[in-house]
Image 1: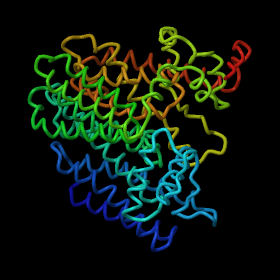
Image 2: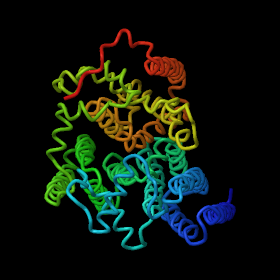
Image 3: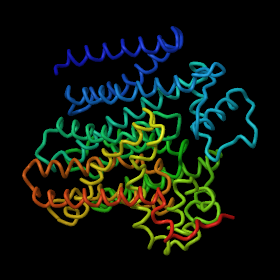
Length: 482
């Protein structure tokens, strides 16, 4: 496809969006939706076009991802306003998004009370900032998260190019396309990213941080204009401070890991990064954007965690299996790590919402893309990571350790928290695919693919048997809570 054909496809897509939005919401709201969503697409489109390695194929992937997500968002907006008493300014949002929107309304109307405050109100503050500019509507935070998620897809492609240029014989443009295509397979990631939740902002922040830190892990030819990466990392850290400060700890871990291979060269920059992150933690605590005490409670476990997590009906067999997990010592929980890791890896299960299935839960439960990216990455960790001439350095261990840390702390029970980490595995999977394209490790990968598929089928069958109570007779009763 030529650049002219891509632009024609974009014009047609915008026209279809306008027609659908105006038909569903009327002229005023329909035009607002069209303009805001067009800008949400245009920003990552410009970033991609101006980047090194851009091709029309990368633009096609971005347009395709947008074409999948935007109808989903329109259906979601229509669902929130289907009853007469609800409007785009006062939508019927469900779940955690309802709380963020309610707090934002209270902030905007200056009626916020102590009982309404969140542990971390930064996302609601961002919504209020949009409303100060454009007026109260669910459209603006939706469009903002769409822009953040699409930008994260683009940055994943650029990070893949930055990390693998010089390590593979592929052209930089091919690496960008490969990274974006693999990220586009993470359907649950894309669907959650456009919800009125913190995730969209964290997706952007982690992708910005990943792209910045890739400078430290890349070959020397890719280490240029470091001041841009320092600014980008600072911006990512500020977003994390405002929205979900616990990810700052993962950022510190990333800086340390990227520094280790060339610590004599990079330690001054690493110490500067770490000092900056520590200052942001202190500033966020001082401004009451979050509670460091809450962070320590989560890491330490205890009755609060035992009460708040793994409490849905579908999770009760898993809770029985783990017992008093959050009351165990850190070492005891560490010994249990393979089970939370497995639970976190396979969740959300593809059949979670087979009853009353809809477009909403169908899209979010298409987890096969993650299984593919994760399975290819696992081949790297099992076969290539310890081979001196066929590994990609420190980078690959960052997402792996963060994934394990979240599983350890949350017992593998909160899927959303690990979603921002999934695209960080994309360069690892792309590296394996690049080696296979060069004719390396094909026999070993074929053997691993067969073993992996058998293991995944077994894991999914065991999971559905757990859900249907097949193992209940062998499990203790779910632990009581305080």
